[in-house]
Structures are given as structure tokens and as C-alpha cells.
Image 1 (cartoon, rainbow, N blue to C red):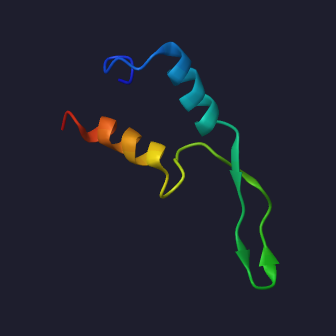
Image 2 (spheres, one colour):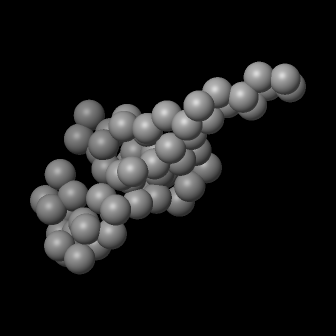
Length: 60
């Protein structure tokens, strides 16, 4: 979909790198979880996240 909107291959590679190999953990007072891979999300509040959401819903 990003290619359809004219996003260059360099930009696509940058976006892919930004979204892959991300990890997160939960920290709740005395409990801290292990690091887990994130495979389906973009960071909340990021400008890129808003842009990708707009691209995703643009043809609905």
C-alpha cells in the first residue's frame, strides 16, 4: 500500500527497520515481565504511527 502512494524504496526500508525487532516489557510495582517481541503494533503517539494508520484507513 505504501508503494501505491509513492513511498520510495529507501523510505520503505526505513519504516520496516523502525517497525521490526521491537521489544517491550511490563513493570508493575514488584513484578517486571521478560522482554517480549512486538510483531503487530506501532508505537503509540508516534508521528509515523499516525501516518501509517491514515494510509491503512484511507480507502475504507
